[in-house]
Image (cartoon, rainbow, N blue to C red; front, side, top):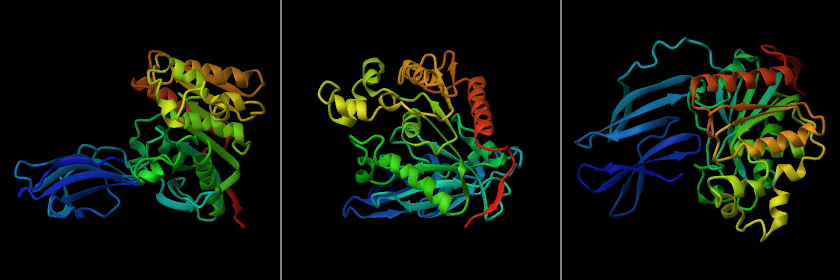
Length: 369
């Protein structure tokens, strides 16, 4: 991800900046005379709202972790030792979140990929449990080690974990936070290498003895919705899917979206210049044979990914007698922004995956081989 400039040092010899580094945040200083960079923090912190004080000696920020809600902290700029100065979330219920850890694996072509694996609450080592794959948007988004129950998104991660699901959040090629080469590795290749990154991630959790290969689910919003619709055209391994505001037809998308140049920039050309590329990488043109029960959620007023993208895929599945349900979110843009709509999408997703993927609150006691 592009670094965010914070400010000059007090002596004017260094510039402080912040950046996303994989699943964590980094605050660094660059010496303007030598170009050397020094990191101020090296832990697993996820920081936000960073600001230096007037004398440029203290740094204020929010900090969070998968099992710790955000709070405000301050530290000396010369010695990163955060001191908590707020109790904004002190009254949150002390509910178990489920352990989250960073896992890494090799993709099909040898590329190093990482993601966040959240275990079910009370997970017993050696048991196989239902696994839900969550795909971020962007595609330049990135999953970080943020508070599990604090997501403003539409997927109730903490609730999934409390109901007996493991949750895998992969940062496939194209994600921010892993350097320019990784960021550009999905150019002209949506549904290619990124798909393999996701599938090998699932394979890895199965190989770990955690995931039950017979109880898998997949979901994502925006680009994550694109990938979810794509995934179920390529494999039948998932028992359920949830497509949120997904781009399902690259050709019709560029003629209706508020960012008509977005896909041509990624695919380096217009549909009339390379029609086969647009067809090859669109779920709509690969929808024959889909069998995965699919939930589609889309904002009625979405200008970024118009709701017609959802209707197209809904009808493609409906005509093939695939179990499919489409929920139109009235008034909503490219993501629900009213509390009741956010709650509705979360509840519906939870119900969908409980119905099709696994019994809530239970784990499979079969041991891994």
